[in-house]
Image (cartoon, rainbow, N blue to C red; front, side, top):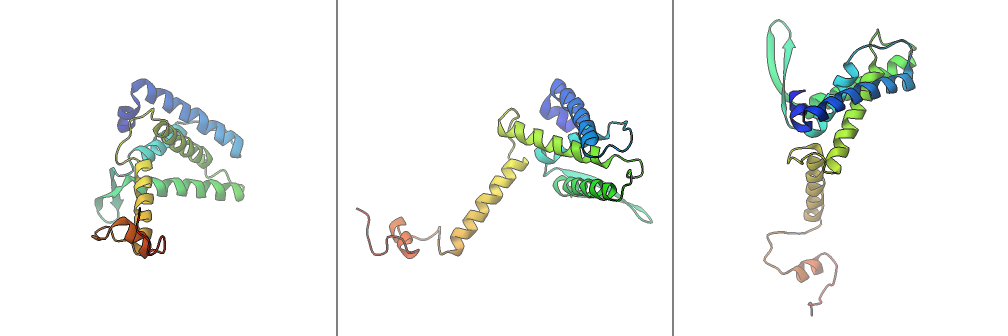
Amino acid sequence: GNAMNDRFGHLGYFAFYLAGGVLACIGYLVLGATMPVLGASGAISAVTGAYLVLLPRARVTLLLLLWVIMPFEVSSLYFLLFQFIWNIWLSVTSEMAGQAGGGVAYVAHSSGYAFGIAVAALLLGIKALPRDPFDLLNLLRTFRRRQSYRRMVSTGYNPYSPVGEHLRRGHQGERRGRLPG
């Protein structure tokens, strides 16, 4: 929560946290209220959903408990994405089986995640939050740019070629044999 508090500011974080809890509860009521719900897990899920969007490259330390306790680090993108998908899967399977999820409101968690992801992406999109080179929207834009570059290179584009632009276009089948002018 501290990293999100730094990004949103004290009042913004407080409002986001409360709204995340309320919207998670509303999502729980709309999508699968089988028993009363009490707790802050929906609000915590909203915060982690925002963390997924705003700080996907941050390293998270996890503890693996086997015969010994082994700490290891993983990217928050993979960890929180796995956690989000896991909660959605548990939401769907517990509702299909007619169970209440063992007393855990997985639908509230999933609603909180969805709220946090949507609000953080919206705030980045309308530039209400400062952009970071490593936020999820910039990572997606970089991924699309790299895919576009790979497609161009696979069709014969050579960025290091000393040949002029008009001849490169001619090589790809456009304006073949014509010089500009």
